[in-house]
Length: 467
Image (cartoon, rainbow, N blue to C red):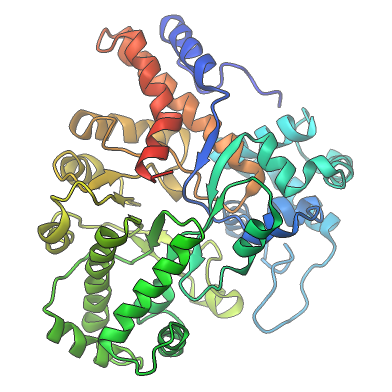
């Protein structure tokens, strides 16, 4: 399981040598993590992580969705049910179960990330399996108890320059306030995620909207007050360092209704009413409203469409959201985004970062759009495609039309804290491999490739996210 220094580099000697030289210049650049899901409470309290199972297995949907697909129940992995029914509570038994099924991750990016974390952080070079599960568990547990494995020390060890969390529009950001009050110099930034108050299909939407408006100091739940509440809360986030918003919509559909029609639509859906079409139209209108606000306040706007969320109703009923059952679907961008782009697409002061779970859209729709509209940038491969092959396909499909500088580098989009250095390392290696091929084919000079490698790893995310 030892980490090979040439992992993910080209097989051919010429390009491999170029990739080695490029990577050597960027391997130790600081990590900029402008979109992710780590818990700000970790950095605020700076307490030791409890055990290997709680750290690696229980929070990581990449791991438990694979185990679930092979008949391992979430209860066996210690994941709490909504009804409070008993689940496995012994972290050692959870870890043994994980080790027993380690073979399931052969050839997956999850294995790359886990092996990197085990080797680089804990010095574990042997392959995980049933025979060494207890020894590996004990070795990790012993090291987790040390001060150098607490969240803030790991932040510094990882070379993180800035990391963004993703926070509900209903969040009071207390943990971010505690981080700032502590005097620690680490840069942990909130990101405005308004899904709970813009998606009429979100559980508790009517109550969420009412609390949201009244939390902004406004009484009546009207369309103007609702929009003003967004402005108030976005400003609240910005004062705590936020530079971006994030929108996890089922589709990329946008709309630009006149304000009277938008107010009527709001009145229809705000208490849980409206048809499926009206609820989708409201989400579409809110993407455009959020773009308007981003043009006003400067928050970078990220759109993450195309996931059929909570596809497994039995799992959703038992455990709730985000249990590994979100499935990609085909997504239209050209027609869907046009109302919003007609309004703001030509404004270079605005940055809208588009992500996709539909790879077929890269060369057909997304790269041509980002290669034209000043406001648009392409986000990196996300979720099911933040893998070596997915990243390489992205470069091959998008570069010829959008170039490199209409993309935003890499972000890790993870709540698995210890995987962050591994994920960035994979991205840097794949980019060096792709650039090395261009140099070997005499399509790029090596000094240009080096400049690009530095920008893709560090410069582009800093600039795109205004960090």
